[in-house]
Image 1 (cartoon, rainbow, N blue to C red):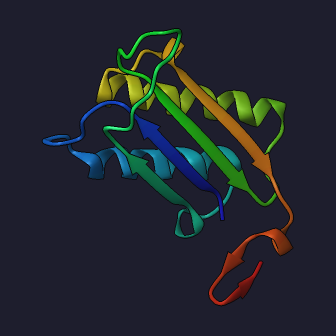
Image 2 (tube, rainbow, N blue to C red):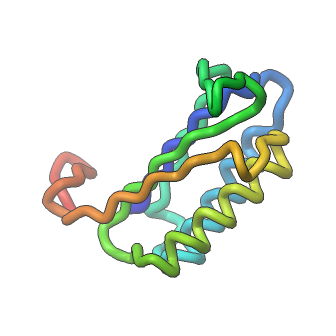
Length: 115
């Protein structure tokens, strides 16, 4: 059930968001080792973001997962998602933060219950 929430100050009008969602889904699933069917990606554009005092293209993300995270996995996820944002939205890797949350199943709701 990994869930990746991404916010960027880039305007997404005219951007092929489906390709971003698809690539992020496969990246998260393959690195964490969870089925794509359980991966959720949320992408928000035109969010006011300042990074280092500049409003140039930037992004912030939070990834929540029930297990599957570790220092090595987190580094690979950071690299993979940063590459997608750089290639698809021209957000430099140096202007992207990604926060990781490893949670228990009882802390995440799904299908009217919890995991």
